[in-house]
Length: 314
Length: 311
Image (cartoon, rainbow over all chains, first blue to last red):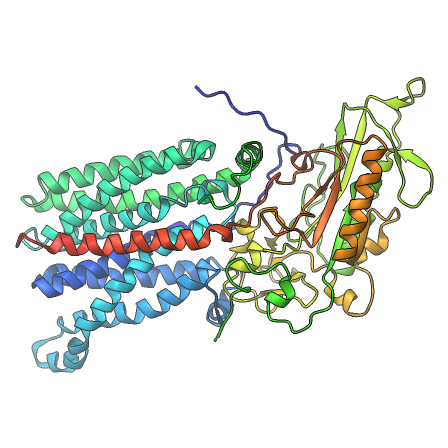
Protein backbone atom coordinates (compact mmCIF):
# COMPACT_ATOMS: atom_id res chain seq x y z
CA UNK A 1 0.00 0.00 0.00
CA UNK A 2 1.17 3.49 -0.87
CA UNK A 3 1.75 5.55 2.28
CA UNK A 4 -0.70 8.39 2.64
CA UNK A 5 0.91 11.68 1.75
CA UNK A 6 1.17 14.08 4.66
CA UNK A 7 -0.31 17.49 4.18
CA UNK A 8 -1.38 20.53 6.13
CA UNK A 9 -4.87 21.93 6.38
CA UNK A 10 -6.85 24.41 8.42
CA UNK A 11 -8.35 22.18 11.12
CA UNK A 12 -9.14 19.56 8.47
CA UNK A 13 -11.70 21.87 6.91
CA UNK A 14 -12.33 21.62 3.16
CA UNK A 15 -10.57 24.09 0.86
CA UNK A 16 -13.14 23.93 -1.92
CA UNK A 17 -16.89 23.60 -1.50
CA UNK A 18 -18.84 20.58 -2.68
CA UNK A 19 -21.58 21.44 -5.16
CA UNK A 20 -25.01 22.09 -3.63
CA UNK A 21 -26.44 19.58 -6.10
CA UNK A 22 -28.50 16.62 -4.98
CA UNK A 23 -29.74 13.45 -6.70
CA UNK A 24 -31.37 15.55 -9.43
CA UNK A 25 -28.06 16.18 -11.13
CA UNK A 26 -26.69 12.62 -11.48
CA UNK A 27 -30.21 11.52 -12.43
CA UNK A 28 -30.19 14.18 -15.10
CA UNK A 29 -26.81 12.97 -16.38
CA UNK A 30 -28.20 9.45 -16.68
CA UNK A 31 -31.43 10.57 -18.35
CA UNK A 32 -29.63 12.90 -20.76
CA UNK A 33 -27.30 10.10 -21.79
CA UNK A 34 -30.19 7.70 -22.21
CA UNK A 35 -32.08 10.22 -24.34
CA UNK A 36 -29.14 11.19 -26.55
CA UNK A 37 -28.07 7.64 -27.36
CA UNK A 38 -31.69 6.50 -27.73
CA UNK A 39 -32.18 9.11 -30.45
CA UNK A 40 -29.28 7.49 -32.30
CA UNK A 41 -30.88 4.06 -31.99
CA UNK A 42 -34.21 5.52 -33.12
CA UNK A 43 -32.69 7.09 -36.23
CA UNK A 44 -30.89 3.88 -37.14
CA UNK A 45 -34.03 1.83 -36.53
CA UNK A 46 -35.99 4.19 -38.76
CA UNK A 47 -33.52 3.90 -41.61
CA UNK A 48 -33.18 0.12 -41.36
CA UNK A 49 -36.88 -0.63 -40.90
CA UNK A 50 -37.15 -1.73 -37.28
CA UNK A 51 -40.43 -0.11 -36.19
CA UNK A 52 -40.58 -1.57 -32.74
CA UNK A 53 -37.03 -0.55 -31.85
CA UNK A 54 -37.70 2.88 -33.36
CA UNK A 55 -40.81 3.33 -31.24
CA UNK A 56 -39.09 2.27 -28.03
CA UNK A 57 -36.12 4.53 -28.64
CA UNK A 58 -38.13 7.58 -29.73
CA UNK A 59 -40.57 7.39 -26.83
CA UNK A 60 -37.77 6.56 -24.43
CA UNK A 61 -35.76 9.59 -25.58
CA UNK A 62 -38.69 11.97 -25.09
CA UNK A 63 -39.58 10.52 -21.69
CA UNK A 64 -35.96 10.70 -20.53
CA UNK A 65 -35.35 14.24 -21.74
CA UNK A 66 -38.65 15.42 -20.26
CA UNK A 67 -37.77 13.93 -16.89
CA UNK A 68 -34.33 15.48 -17.09
CA UNK A 69 -35.88 18.95 -17.45
CA UNK A 70 -37.87 18.31 -14.29
CA UNK A 71 -34.67 17.31 -12.48
CA UNK A 72 -32.75 20.32 -13.81
CA UNK A 73 -35.41 22.80 -12.78
CA UNK A 74 -36.05 21.15 -9.44
CA UNK A 75 -32.39 21.44 -8.55
CA UNK A 76 -32.30 25.22 -8.95
CA UNK A 77 -32.22 27.49 -5.93
CA UNK A 78 -34.76 29.66 -7.79
CA UNK A 79 -36.67 27.32 -10.11
CA UNK A 80 -38.94 30.14 -11.31
CA UNK A 81 -35.90 31.74 -12.91
CA UNK A 82 -35.00 28.72 -15.06
CA UNK A 83 -35.47 30.75 -18.23
CA UNK A 84 -32.56 33.00 -17.23
CA UNK A 85 -30.43 30.15 -18.60
CA UNK A 86 -31.44 31.40 -22.04
CA UNK A 87 -30.48 35.06 -21.63
CA UNK A 88 -26.84 34.45 -22.62
CA UNK A 89 -24.80 31.89 -24.54
CA UNK A 90 -21.35 31.40 -23.01
CA UNK A 91 -18.79 28.99 -24.44
CA UNK A 92 -16.91 29.24 -21.12
CA UNK A 93 -19.87 27.70 -19.31
CA UNK A 94 -20.56 24.02 -20.04
CA UNK A 95 -23.96 24.50 -18.42
CA UNK A 96 -24.80 27.29 -20.84
CA UNK A 97 -23.56 25.27 -23.82
CA UNK A 98 -25.51 22.27 -22.56
CA UNK A 99 -28.68 24.27 -22.12
CA UNK A 100 -28.48 25.40 -25.73
CA UNK A 101 -27.76 21.86 -26.94
CA UNK A 102 -30.84 20.69 -24.99
CA UNK A 103 -32.88 23.56 -26.39
CA UNK A 104 -32.05 22.44 -29.92
CA UNK A 105 -32.31 18.73 -29.20
CA UNK A 106 -35.59 18.56 -27.28
CA UNK A 107 -37.99 19.80 -29.99
CA UNK A 108 -36.43 17.40 -32.50
CA UNK A 109 -36.67 14.45 -30.14
CA UNK A 110 -40.17 15.61 -29.25
CA UNK A 111 -41.27 15.78 -32.90
CA UNK A 112 -39.92 12.29 -33.55
CA UNK A 113 -41.73 10.91 -30.51
CA UNK A 114 -44.95 12.75 -31.32
CA UNK A 115 -44.92 11.28 -34.80
CA UNK A 116 -44.41 7.88 -33.25
CA UNK A 117 -47.43 8.43 -31.03
CA UNK A 118 -49.64 9.24 -34.02
CA UNK A 119 -48.97 5.77 -35.41
CA UNK A 120 -50.81 4.45 -32.36
CA UNK A 121 -53.97 6.38 -33.26
CA UNK A 122 -57.07 4.52 -34.49
CA UNK A 123 -57.11 3.85 -38.22
CA UNK A 124 -59.55 6.63 -39.11
CA UNK A 125 -57.43 9.29 -37.34
CA UNK A 126 -54.11 8.22 -38.82
CA UNK A 127 -54.26 11.02 -41.37
CA UNK A 128 -53.94 13.63 -38.63
CA UNK A 129 -50.37 12.65 -37.95
CA UNK A 130 -49.24 12.53 -41.55
CA UNK A 131 -47.45 15.92 -41.64
CA UNK A 132 -45.72 15.13 -38.39
CA UNK A 133 -44.60 11.74 -39.65
CA UNK A 134 -43.29 13.38 -42.79
CA UNK A 135 -40.82 15.53 -40.82
CA UNK A 136 -40.05 12.93 -38.16
CA UNK A 137 -37.30 11.28 -40.20
CA UNK A 138 -35.13 14.41 -40.55
CA UNK A 139 -36.06 15.51 -37.03
CA UNK A 140 -34.94 12.14 -35.71
CA UNK A 141 -31.62 12.35 -37.55
CA UNK A 142 -31.12 15.84 -36.12
CA UNK A 143 -31.88 14.52 -32.64
CA UNK A 144 -29.36 11.71 -33.14
CA UNK A 145 -26.59 14.14 -34.10
CA UNK A 146 -27.37 16.53 -31.24
CA UNK A 147 -27.78 13.53 -28.97
CA UNK A 148 -24.03 13.07 -29.16
CA UNK A 149 -23.71 16.44 -27.46
CA UNK A 150 -26.43 15.73 -24.92
CA UNK A 151 -24.73 12.49 -23.91
CA UNK A 152 -21.18 13.83 -23.61
CA UNK A 153 -21.24 17.50 -22.54
CA UNK A 154 -22.24 16.56 -18.99
CA UNK A 155 -18.77 15.14 -18.45
CA UNK A 156 -17.29 18.54 -19.28
CA UNK A 157 -19.79 20.16 -16.94
CA UNK A 158 -18.41 18.09 -14.05
CA UNK A 159 -14.76 18.36 -15.03
CA UNK A 160 -14.81 22.14 -15.41
CA UNK A 161 -14.83 22.57 -11.63
CA UNK A 162 -12.34 22.67 -8.77
CA UNK A 163 -13.86 19.45 -7.41
CA UNK A 164 -10.75 17.25 -7.39
CA UNK A 165 -12.18 13.89 -8.49
CA UNK A 166 -14.22 15.48 -11.27
CA UNK A 167 -11.50 17.74 -12.60
CA UNK A 168 -8.81 15.06 -12.54
CA UNK A 169 -11.13 12.70 -14.47
CA UNK A 170 -11.33 15.17 -17.37
CA UNK A 171 -9.29 13.15 -19.87
CA UNK A 172 -11.51 10.06 -19.77
CA UNK A 173 -14.84 11.16 -18.28
CA UNK A 174 -16.48 12.13 -21.62
CA UNK A 175 -15.73 8.63 -22.91
CA UNK A 176 -17.10 7.02 -19.76
CA UNK A 177 -20.29 9.08 -19.96
CA UNK A 178 -20.81 8.57 -23.71
CA UNK A 179 -20.19 4.84 -23.41
CA UNK A 180 -22.47 4.61 -20.39
CA UNK A 181 -25.16 6.37 -22.45
CA UNK A 182 -24.74 3.76 -25.19
CA UNK A 183 -25.12 0.94 -22.66
CA UNK A 184 -28.28 2.53 -21.22
CA UNK A 185 -29.93 3.18 -24.58
CA UNK A 186 -29.03 -0.31 -25.76
CA UNK A 187 -30.55 -1.68 -22.58
CA UNK A 188 -33.78 0.22 -23.13
CA UNK A 189 -33.94 -1.00 -26.73
CA UNK A 190 -33.56 -4.60 -25.55
CA UNK A 191 -36.44 -4.12 -23.12
CA UNK A 192 -38.81 -2.53 -25.59
CA UNK A 193 -38.11 -4.26 -28.90
CA UNK A 194 -38.45 -7.95 -29.78
CA UNK A 195 -35.21 -9.87 -30.19
CA UNK A 196 -35.36 -9.94 -33.99
CA UNK A 197 -35.33 -6.12 -34.09
CA UNK A 198 -33.05 -5.49 -31.12
CA UNK A 199 -29.75 -6.64 -32.65
CA UNK A 200 -28.37 -3.09 -32.92
CA UNK A 201 -29.49 -2.36 -29.35
CA UNK A 202 -27.58 -5.42 -28.11
CA UNK A 203 -24.47 -4.47 -30.07
CA UNK A 204 -24.65 -0.84 -28.90
CA UNK A 205 -25.12 -1.99 -25.31
CA UNK A 206 -22.24 -4.45 -25.44
CA UNK A 207 -19.90 -1.98 -27.14
CA UNK A 208 -20.85 0.78 -24.74
CA UNK A 209 -20.37 -1.45 -21.72
CA UNK A 210 -16.95 -2.57 -22.93
CA UNK A 211 -15.74 0.96 -23.63
CA UNK A 212 -17.17 2.22 -20.36
CA UNK A 213 -15.39 -0.41 -18.29
CA UNK A 214 -12.10 0.08 -20.12
CA UNK A 215 -12.18 3.87 -19.94
CA UNK A 216 -13.14 3.77 -16.27
CA UNK A 217 -10.05 1.67 -15.57
CA UNK A 218 -7.89 4.10 -17.46
CA UNK A 219 -9.51 7.03 -15.68
CA UNK A 220 -8.87 5.56 -12.25
CA UNK A 221 -5.23 4.98 -13.16
CA UNK A 222 -4.71 8.56 -14.36
CA UNK A 223 -6.26 10.39 -11.42
CA UNK A 224 -3.57 9.95 -8.76
CA UNK A 225 -4.89 10.17 -5.22
CA UNK A 226 -8.13 11.75 -6.40
CA UNK A 227 -9.14 8.26 -7.57
CA UNK A 228 -9.44 7.18 -3.91
CA UNK A 229 -12.99 8.51 -3.43
CA UNK A 230 -14.08 6.35 -6.40
CA UNK A 231 -13.37 3.28 -4.29
CA UNK A 232 -14.57 4.40 -0.87
CA UNK A 233 -17.94 4.59 0.85
CA UNK A 234 -21.16 5.12 -1.05
CA UNK A 235 -19.38 6.11 -4.26
CA UNK A 236 -17.32 2.92 -4.12
CA UNK A 237 -20.42 0.77 -3.60
CA UNK A 238 -22.23 2.49 -6.47
CA UNK A 239 -19.32 2.10 -8.86
CA UNK A 240 -18.77 -1.54 -7.94
CA UNK A 241 -22.48 -2.16 -8.52
CA UNK A 242 -22.25 -0.27 -11.79
CA UNK A 243 -19.41 -2.46 -13.04
CA UNK A 244 -21.15 -5.68 -12.04
CA UNK A 245 -24.49 -4.66 -13.58
CA UNK A 246 -22.94 -3.27 -16.74
CA UNK A 247 -20.67 -6.29 -17.22
CA UNK A 248 -23.39 -8.85 -16.52
CA UNK A 249 -25.89 -7.01 -18.71
CA UNK A 250 -23.48 -6.83 -21.61
CA UNK A 251 -22.42 -10.47 -21.41
CA UNK A 252 -26.05 -11.57 -21.15
CA UNK A 253 -26.96 -9.39 -24.13
CA UNK A 254 -24.28 -10.93 -26.31
CA UNK A 255 -24.71 -14.55 -25.24
CA UNK A 256 -28.44 -14.97 -24.69
CA UNK A 257 -30.15 -11.68 -25.49
CA UNK A 258 -31.02 -12.69 -29.03
CA UNK A 259 -32.74 -15.88 -27.96
CA UNK A 260 -34.69 -15.22 -24.80
CA UNK A 261 -36.93 -12.19 -24.38
CA UNK A 262 -36.90 -12.62 -20.62
CA UNK A 263 -33.12 -12.57 -20.51
CA UNK A 264 -33.09 -9.57 -22.82
CA UNK A 265 -35.37 -7.62 -20.52
CA UNK A 266 -33.31 -8.56 -17.48
CA UNK A 267 -30.09 -7.59 -19.20
CA UNK A 268 -31.60 -4.34 -20.39
CA UNK A 269 -32.67 -3.48 -16.87
CA UNK A 270 -29.20 -4.31 -15.55
CA UNK A 271 -27.60 -2.07 -18.16
CA UNK A 272 -29.92 0.82 -17.31
CA UNK A 273 -29.27 0.40 -13.61
CA UNK A 274 -25.53 0.13 -14.24
CA UNK A 275 -25.51 3.36 -16.23
CA UNK A 276 -27.42 5.18 -13.49
CA UNK A 277 -25.03 3.80 -10.87
CA UNK A 278 -22.05 5.09 -12.87
CA UNK A 279 -23.37 8.66 -12.81
CA UNK A 280 -24.39 8.54 -9.16
CA UNK A 281 -21.06 6.98 -8.19
CA UNK A 282 -18.93 9.54 -9.99
CA UNK A 283 -21.11 12.33 -8.66
CA UNK A 284 -20.74 11.08 -5.07
CA UNK A 285 -16.99 10.56 -5.42
CA UNK A 286 -16.57 14.19 -6.48
CA UNK A 287 -18.62 15.46 -3.59
CA UNK A 288 -16.48 13.44 -1.18
CA UNK A 289 -13.26 14.67 -2.79
CA UNK A 290 -14.38 18.25 -2.19
CA UNK A 291 -15.14 17.59 1.47
CA UNK A 292 -11.61 16.32 2.21
CA UNK A 293 -8.85 18.95 1.90
CA UNK A 294 -6.35 16.16 1.14
CA UNK A 295 -7.58 15.88 -2.44
CA UNK A 296 -7.19 19.59 -3.04
CA UNK A 297 -3.92 20.24 -1.23
CA UNK A 298 -1.81 17.15 -2.00
CA UNK A 299 -2.06 17.26 -5.83
CA UNK A 300 -1.37 21.00 -5.82
CA UNK A 301 1.66 20.51 -3.55
CA UNK A 302 2.94 17.75 -5.82
CA UNK A 303 2.46 20.04 -8.81
CA UNK A 304 4.41 22.83 -7.11
CA UNK A 305 7.20 20.54 -6.01
CA UNK A 306 7.28 18.87 -9.41
CA UNK A 307 8.52 22.17 -10.84
CA UNK A 308 7.49 24.06 -13.93
CA UNK A 309 5.05 21.54 -15.41
CA UNK A 310 2.12 23.75 -14.47
CA UNK A 311 1.12 25.16 -17.82
CA UNK A 312 0.14 23.29 -20.94
CA UNK A 313 -0.50 19.89 -19.39
CA UNK A 314 -4.02 18.65 -20.00
CA UNK B 1 -29.38 36.69 -26.69
CA UNK B 2 -25.91 38.03 -26.32
CA UNK B 3 -22.89 35.90 -27.01
CA UNK B 4 -20.32 36.73 -24.41
CA UNK B 5 -17.22 35.00 -23.30
CA UNK B 6 -15.17 36.80 -20.72
CA UNK B 7 -12.71 37.84 -23.41
CA UNK B 8 -11.66 34.52 -24.86
CA UNK B 9 -11.60 31.38 -22.79
CA UNK B 10 -9.06 32.67 -20.33
CA UNK B 11 -9.37 36.38 -20.92
CA UNK B 12 -6.77 39.10 -20.71
CA UNK B 13 -5.02 40.32 -17.61
CA UNK B 14 -7.10 43.50 -17.60
CA UNK B 15 -10.37 41.80 -16.76
CA UNK B 16 -12.60 44.89 -16.91
CA UNK B 17 -11.46 45.69 -20.45
CA UNK B 18 -11.79 42.01 -21.34
CA UNK B 19 -15.41 42.09 -20.18
CA UNK B 20 -16.13 44.90 -22.60
CA UNK B 21 -15.80 48.01 -20.44
CA UNK B 22 -14.53 50.99 -22.41
CA UNK B 23 -11.73 52.86 -20.62
CA UNK B 24 -12.31 51.27 -17.23
CA UNK B 25 -10.98 53.01 -14.12
CA UNK B 26 -7.94 51.45 -12.40
CA UNK B 27 -8.65 47.96 -11.05
CA UNK B 28 -9.56 47.96 -7.38
CA UNK B 29 -8.60 45.34 -4.86
CA UNK B 30 -7.63 44.29 -1.37
CA UNK B 31 -4.19 43.67 0.05
CA UNK B 32 -4.62 41.72 3.27
CA UNK B 33 -1.39 41.88 5.26
CA UNK B 34 -1.84 39.08 7.77
CA UNK B 35 1.28 40.12 9.68
CA UNK B 36 -0.76 43.06 10.97
CA UNK B 37 -3.95 41.17 11.80
CA UNK B 38 -4.87 41.08 15.49
CA UNK B 39 -7.88 38.80 15.05
CA UNK B 40 -10.42 41.36 16.24
CA UNK B 41 -13.00 40.25 13.64
CA UNK B 42 -14.13 43.83 13.11
CA UNK B 43 -14.02 43.04 9.37
CA UNK B 44 -16.42 40.11 9.78
CA UNK B 45 -18.86 42.24 11.74
CA UNK B 46 -18.62 45.29 9.49
CA UNK B 47 -19.18 43.13 6.41
CA UNK B 48 -22.22 41.44 7.92
CA UNK B 49 -23.75 44.72 9.00
CA UNK B 50 -23.17 46.64 5.79
CA UNK B 51 -24.26 43.86 3.46
CA UNK B 52 -27.31 42.77 5.48
CA UNK B 53 -25.97 39.22 5.70
CA UNK B 54 -28.16 36.88 7.75
CA UNK B 55 -26.93 34.93 10.73
CA UNK B 56 -25.53 31.58 9.62
CA UNK B 57 -25.02 29.50 12.71
CA UNK B 58 -23.78 30.22 16.21
CA UNK B 59 -21.56 27.28 17.01
CA UNK B 60 -18.52 26.47 19.08
CA UNK B 61 -16.17 24.92 16.56
CA UNK B 62 -13.27 24.22 18.88
CA UNK B 63 -10.87 25.74 16.39
CA UNK B 64 -8.96 28.32 18.41
CA UNK B 65 -10.87 31.62 18.40
CA UNK B 66 -12.55 30.85 15.08
CA UNK B 67 -16.23 30.03 15.41
CA UNK B 68 -17.01 31.23 11.90
CA UNK B 69 -15.31 28.34 10.13
CA UNK B 70 -14.88 29.61 6.63
CA UNK B 71 -16.20 31.79 3.86
CA UNK B 72 -19.67 31.03 2.53
CA UNK B 73 -22.96 32.44 1.35
CA UNK B 74 -23.39 34.39 4.56
CA UNK B 75 -19.76 34.94 5.56
CA UNK B 76 -17.86 37.21 3.19
CA UNK B 77 -14.94 37.94 5.51
CA UNK B 78 -13.55 35.18 7.68
CA UNK B 79 -10.77 35.50 10.24
CA UNK B 80 -8.68 32.36 10.62
CA UNK B 81 -6.82 31.64 13.86
CA UNK B 82 -3.91 29.21 13.82
CA UNK B 83 -1.99 28.29 16.96
CA UNK B 84 1.50 27.02 16.22
CA UNK B 85 4.44 25.68 18.19
CA UNK B 86 6.78 27.96 16.33
CA UNK B 87 8.89 30.82 17.62
CA UNK B 88 7.22 34.19 17.53
CA UNK B 89 9.30 37.04 16.23
CA UNK B 90 9.10 40.75 16.76
CA UNK B 91 7.80 42.16 13.50
CA UNK B 92 8.18 45.70 12.23
CA UNK B 93 4.85 47.47 12.02
CA UNK B 94 3.94 49.11 8.75
CA UNK B 95 3.62 52.73 9.75
CA UNK B 96 6.65 53.17 11.94
CA UNK B 97 4.75 52.57 15.16
CA UNK B 98 7.60 50.54 16.55
CA UNK B 99 7.91 46.84 17.10
CA UNK B 100 5.03 44.54 17.90
CA UNK B 101 4.82 40.80 18.38
CA UNK B 102 4.30 38.68 15.28
CA UNK B 103 0.77 38.93 13.92
CA UNK B 104 0.26 41.54 16.60
CA UNK B 105 -0.90 38.77 18.87
CA UNK B 106 -0.44 39.28 22.58
CA UNK B 107 0.62 35.91 23.87
CA UNK B 108 1.04 34.82 27.43
CA UNK B 109 3.79 32.37 26.62
CA UNK B 110 6.46 34.92 25.76
CA UNK B 111 9.68 33.98 27.41
CA UNK B 112 11.30 37.29 28.36
CA UNK B 113 14.67 35.65 28.78
CA UNK B 114 14.78 34.67 25.14
CA UNK B 115 12.82 37.68 23.95
CA UNK B 116 10.65 35.34 21.94
CA UNK B 117 8.05 32.67 22.47
CA UNK B 118 7.86 29.09 21.36
CA UNK B 119 4.27 29.68 20.36
CA UNK B 120 2.77 31.89 17.72
CA UNK B 121 -0.67 32.80 16.60
CA UNK B 122 -1.39 33.33 12.94
CA UNK B 123 -4.46 35.33 12.07
CA UNK B 124 -5.71 36.10 8.63
CA UNK B 125 -8.82 37.71 7.26
CA UNK B 126 -9.90 35.76 4.19
CA UNK B 127 -12.15 37.11 1.45
CA UNK B 128 -13.21 36.48 -2.15
CA UNK B 129 -10.12 36.75 -4.35
CA UNK B 130 -11.86 38.54 -7.26
CA UNK B 131 -9.71 36.43 -9.60
CA UNK B 132 -8.36 37.77 -12.87
CA UNK B 133 -9.51 34.49 -14.40
CA UNK B 134 -12.60 33.82 -12.32
CA UNK B 135 -14.00 30.29 -12.60
CA UNK B 136 -17.33 31.27 -11.00
CA UNK B 137 -17.83 33.94 -13.64
CA UNK B 138 -16.73 31.66 -16.47
CA UNK B 139 -19.14 28.85 -15.64
CA UNK B 140 -22.18 30.97 -14.71
CA UNK B 141 -24.86 30.04 -17.28
CA UNK B 142 -27.15 33.03 -16.72
CA UNK B 143 -24.68 35.90 -16.78
CA UNK B 144 -25.70 36.70 -13.21
CA UNK B 145 -22.04 36.82 -12.24
CA UNK B 146 -20.45 39.79 -13.88
CA UNK B 147 -17.15 41.64 -14.11
CA UNK B 148 -17.52 45.22 -12.95
CA UNK B 149 -15.70 48.18 -14.44
CA UNK B 150 -13.44 48.01 -11.39
CA UNK B 151 -12.31 44.50 -12.30
CA UNK B 152 -14.22 42.91 -9.43
CA UNK B 153 -16.62 39.95 -9.70
CA UNK B 154 -20.19 40.53 -8.51
CA UNK B 155 -23.38 38.44 -8.41
CA UNK B 156 -26.48 40.15 -9.80
CA UNK B 157 -28.88 38.76 -7.23
CA UNK B 158 -32.01 39.39 -9.32
CA UNK B 159 -30.68 37.29 -12.22
CA UNK B 160 -29.05 34.31 -10.50
CA UNK B 161 -31.33 31.27 -10.66
CA UNK B 162 -29.36 29.31 -8.09
CA UNK B 163 -28.01 26.65 -10.46
CA UNK B 164 -25.09 26.25 -8.07
CA UNK B 165 -22.42 25.72 -10.74
CA UNK B 166 -20.20 28.52 -9.41
CA UNK B 167 -19.94 26.74 -6.04
CA UNK B 168 -17.79 23.73 -7.11
CA UNK B 169 -16.07 25.88 -9.74
CA UNK B 170 -14.42 28.24 -7.24
CA UNK B 171 -10.91 26.98 -6.44
CA UNK B 172 -11.07 28.70 -3.05
CA UNK B 173 -14.49 27.53 -1.82
CA UNK B 174 -15.70 31.12 -1.52
CA UNK B 175 -19.02 31.44 -3.34
CA UNK B 176 -22.02 29.51 -2.06
CA UNK B 177 -25.75 29.26 -2.59
CA UNK B 178 -27.62 30.73 0.37
CA UNK B 179 -29.90 28.21 2.01
CA UNK B 180 -33.11 29.00 3.83
CA UNK B 181 -36.76 29.67 3.16
CA UNK B 182 -38.21 32.72 1.46
CA UNK B 183 -37.98 34.80 4.63
CA UNK B 184 -34.19 34.75 4.23
CA UNK B 185 -32.80 37.57 2.10
CA UNK B 186 -31.56 36.19 -1.25
CA UNK B 187 -32.19 32.56 -0.31
CA UNK B 188 -31.49 30.19 -3.19
CA UNK B 189 -29.09 32.63 -4.81
CA UNK B 190 -25.28 32.45 -5.05
CA UNK B 191 -23.68 34.92 -2.67
CA UNK B 192 -20.21 36.27 -2.01
CA UNK B 193 -18.16 39.43 -1.38
CA UNK B 194 -18.91 42.29 -3.77
CA UNK B 195 -15.84 44.25 -2.68
CA UNK B 196 -18.57 46.63 -1.47
CA UNK B 197 -19.47 47.63 -5.01
CA UNK B 198 -22.13 49.95 -3.58
CA UNK B 199 -19.68 51.73 -1.26
CA UNK B 200 -16.89 52.08 -3.82
CA UNK B 201 -19.34 53.69 -6.22
CA UNK B 202 -19.85 56.44 -3.65
CA UNK B 203 -16.12 56.94 -3.17
CA UNK B 204 -16.14 55.04 0.10
CA UNK B 205 -13.85 52.29 1.35
CA UNK B 206 -15.23 48.72 1.61
CA UNK B 207 -16.71 48.07 5.04
CA UNK B 208 -14.08 45.55 6.14
CA UNK B 209 -11.13 47.76 5.24
CA UNK B 210 -12.84 50.74 6.83
CA UNK B 211 -13.32 48.85 10.08
CA UNK B 212 -9.87 47.25 10.23
CA UNK B 213 -8.01 48.96 13.11
CA UNK B 214 -4.50 47.88 12.09
CA UNK B 215 -4.67 48.41 8.32
CA UNK B 216 -4.20 44.70 7.87
CA UNK B 217 -6.93 45.05 5.21
CA UNK B 218 -5.91 47.65 2.67
CA UNK B 219 -8.15 48.76 -0.18
CA UNK B 220 -7.06 50.66 -3.24
CA UNK B 221 -5.80 50.55 -6.80
CA UNK B 222 -4.47 47.06 -7.36
CA UNK B 223 -1.24 48.24 -9.00
CA UNK B 224 -0.40 50.42 -6.05
CA UNK B 225 -1.33 47.72 -3.56
CA UNK B 226 0.97 45.26 -5.31
CA UNK B 227 3.84 47.71 -5.06
CA UNK B 228 3.14 48.35 -1.40
CA UNK B 229 2.98 44.60 -0.73
CA UNK B 230 6.33 43.95 -2.41
CA UNK B 231 7.87 46.63 -0.25
CA UNK B 232 6.29 45.20 2.89
CA UNK B 233 7.44 41.65 2.22
CA UNK B 234 10.94 43.02 1.60
CA UNK B 235 10.89 44.81 4.95
CA UNK B 236 9.74 41.68 6.76
CA UNK B 237 12.31 39.46 5.12
CA UNK B 238 15.06 41.96 5.89
CA UNK B 239 13.93 41.81 9.51
CA UNK B 240 14.47 38.06 9.48
CA UNK B 241 10.90 36.87 8.84
CA UNK B 242 11.99 34.49 6.13
CA UNK B 243 8.59 32.79 5.80
CA UNK B 244 6.78 35.99 4.82
CA UNK B 245 5.43 35.60 1.30
CA UNK B 246 2.86 37.09 -1.03
CA UNK B 247 -0.05 34.94 -2.18
CA UNK B 248 -2.01 35.55 -5.41
CA UNK B 249 0.04 38.66 -6.29
CA UNK B 250 1.52 36.96 -9.36
CA UNK B 251 -0.30 37.45 -12.66
CA UNK B 252 1.37 34.30 -13.94
CA UNK B 253 -0.31 32.04 -11.39
CA UNK B 254 -3.24 29.73 -12.15
CA UNK B 255 -5.89 32.42 -11.70
CA UNK B 256 -4.00 35.30 -13.33
CA UNK B 257 -3.47 36.83 -9.90
CA UNK B 258 -6.11 37.89 -7.41
CA UNK B 259 -7.86 41.22 -7.17
CA UNK B 260 -7.58 40.40 -3.49
CA UNK B 261 -4.18 39.10 -2.46
CA UNK B 262 -2.39 38.36 0.78
CA UNK B 263 0.82 38.52 2.73
CA UNK B 264 1.09 35.21 4.60
CA UNK B 265 3.53 34.00 7.25
CA UNK B 266 3.23 30.31 6.41
CA UNK B 267 2.18 28.02 3.57
CA UNK B 268 -1.25 28.86 2.12
CA UNK B 269 -2.80 25.54 3.15
CA UNK B 270 -2.07 26.37 6.81
CA UNK B 271 -4.66 29.12 6.41
CA UNK B 272 -7.05 26.86 4.50
CA UNK B 273 -6.00 28.31 1.14
CA UNK B 274 -5.07 26.17 -1.89
CA UNK B 275 -1.29 26.23 -2.53
CA UNK B 276 -1.54 26.30 -6.33
CA UNK B 277 -5.06 27.24 -7.40
CA UNK B 278 -5.85 26.96 -11.11
CA UNK B 279 -8.99 28.15 -12.88
CA UNK B 280 -10.55 24.97 -14.29
CA UNK B 281 -11.54 26.84 -17.46
CA UNK B 282 -7.86 26.82 -18.44
CA UNK B 283 -8.32 23.23 -19.60
CA UNK B 284 -11.80 23.79 -21.02
CA UNK B 285 -10.80 23.86 -24.72
CA UNK B 286 -9.08 20.49 -24.29
CA UNK B 287 -12.10 19.18 -22.38
CA UNK B 288 -14.44 20.24 -25.19
CA UNK B 289 -12.20 18.52 -27.73
CA UNK B 290 -12.24 15.32 -25.67
CA UNK B 291 -16.04 15.47 -25.37
CA UNK B 292 -16.36 16.05 -29.12
CA UNK B 293 -14.27 12.94 -29.82
CA UNK B 294 -16.36 10.95 -27.33
CA UNK B 295 -19.64 12.22 -28.78
CA UNK B 296 -18.59 11.47 -32.36
CA UNK B 297 -17.34 8.09 -31.19
CA UNK B 298 -20.77 7.39 -29.75
CA UNK B 299 -22.40 8.36 -33.06
CA UNK B 300 -19.99 6.14 -34.96
CA UNK B 301 -20.60 3.30 -32.52
CA UNK B 302 -24.35 3.62 -32.94
CA UNK B 303 -23.99 3.62 -36.72
CA UNK B 304 -21.73 0.59 -36.54
CA UNK B 305 -24.35 -1.24 -34.45
CA UNK B 306 -26.65 -1.08 -37.47
CA UNK B 307 -24.03 -2.06 -40.03
CA UNK B 308 -23.74 -5.53 -41.47
CA UNK B 309 -26.12 -8.05 -39.95
CA UNK B 310 -29.84 -7.78 -40.51
CA UNK B 311 -30.76 -8.89 -37.02
